[in-house]
Each structure stands twice: as C-alpha cells, then as structure tokens.
Image: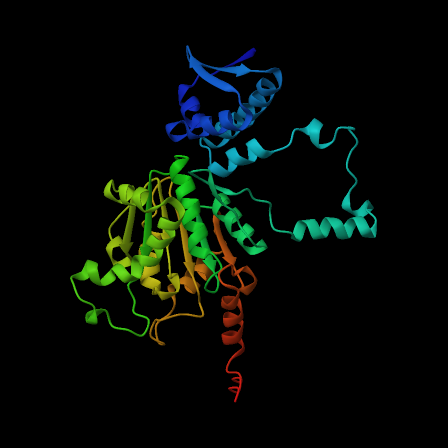
Length: 346
C-alpha cells in the first residue's frame, strides 16, 4: 500500500475539487480505486502505485482547471477520468503522423472514425443491476449530448427513445447525486380532444397527459420506488402551466412533447433552470397540436439557442425507432403520404 499527499493552501479549492456533496471525489475513487482522505487540510491518497500515480495525475488536471476557472463542470471531470495516459496512448514515443502524410486508405479510416457517433457506456440505474443502453447510433449521440451539455433538445418520431432515455439519464443523475430532484413536465394540450369532457378537477384532467412519463419511470425503477420518490418530492410530474415562477436548482428537468409549446411557454420553461441543473426537451415536430397560426416553441428555441455553449440539439430518425417493428414502417408510411390499400382477399 502506497500513500501520497496533495497540499492545499486554499480549502475552498478542495471543496470545488470534490464537488457538491463530494460527487467528484466519489467518481475519482470509484473509477480508479484509490482511497482519498482529508487530514490536516491536505488530501491523502492511499492505494497501489498505479492507483496513486493515476490519482495524482487526475487531481493535478482538475486542480489546474479549478485554478484557472474557479469551478469544475461534470464534463471536465469525466474527461479527466476517461483520458488516456500519454505513455499508454503512444508507448513507442514516436510522434503520430500528420493527417496529410497518411495514405488514402488511412485518411478514409480517420475521416470515417470522426463521423462515427461518440462511444457511450450503458446508463446505470442502480436498480437490481439494471442498465439501459442506447440501441442505435442516433441514441448513442443523444445520450452523449445529455452527458456533455446542460440543455439538450431532442427531436424525432414516436418510438425512438427520446423520453425513455432522458428519464433513464435523470435517474442515473439522481442516484449518483449529480442532482437532488427530478421534475418531469408536459404541456396539457389536447390532441384533437377536449379536456373539459374529462371528469374531476384540474389535476385529474391533466393526469392522462402526464401518464407517459409515469409509465417510463415505473418501467425503469418500479412502481413502489417511484411512489416513494413522489411522496418525498424527489420526483415531481407537473403540467407545464404549473412551472411559472419557479427556480429549480440541482434538478434534472425533462419537458416532453415540447412541440406543443408556444414560444412564450418555451421561454418561461427554459428560464426555470437553476444552478447545477440540466434540462432535456423532447418533441416530434411532425405531431404539432398547436393552432396553425401559432409558432412552435421547440423549433423556435432550437433556432435561437443553437450556437450557445453547453446547448445541444439532436435529431433522431426512423432508424432509431426501437418499439415494435411496425412502428418504424408506420412512421415511414405517414412520411411518404397517402398510399394504396391492399385489396381484401375473396
């Protein structure tokens, strides 16, 4: 067993380095297996030589970011934890060849690799070893975008996993203590039907609109656990109209059916975002239920915010549909317009 000590003159740096409720410290410890202890204002690392060496390199990299920016972001910590050591990435010590010096075949390989979606790991739910894994290149890109950005817009047809993957990422963030709450939001807009016809008070009327979000939660972590989370206000499912005036810190917020928001509603929703929060907005722009003379808040937001740092937009397609195989054919058929019907057999 080896030991190393990292000295700090500014204890605020240690708090920033370890993150809210020591979440970054736990990520370092769990990733490389090193034991970390604070004693007499210093950080002490315990482990084998390789663990100590890697731990010192990671903390040095993160400390440099803190000293430069005064803060740490989740993506920066993940990048430090997953980056390869120089010796491992190029054991011979030779300089890599510039792209211009590559053969045509090598250059094609490099260009193909750059076009491929980023690799991703399964979404750990910590629920009886249950994991959720992206099942298409588009879904891989989607999960990667959520991990790397604070605001993500996901547009795509029914069945491509927009809501399901977002809820899975929210549960992962909650259970790894990246956030302390999940808020799931939906606009209560009728798809050709009238709310007034439904019995009960307002909450009873909007319940059917919130049901798809609850279905995803129950499928991922189970009914009883969801019930406990909701009773303790850890998970909240609310209509979009109920979001006005709120500020949500350390919260993973998902807006489903974002295509049915107006520009004003979308602005109101997005500006609920507080410190250490993350927002995912999903929608299908081919199923807009707004009046024809009302602009869609989802497409407007993507156009307005697309060039802002830490904002990403992902477009999923029919190739990402993972429901029943007929759903993919249905989406394709509706995209192509009216077609012929088969003659009934006599």
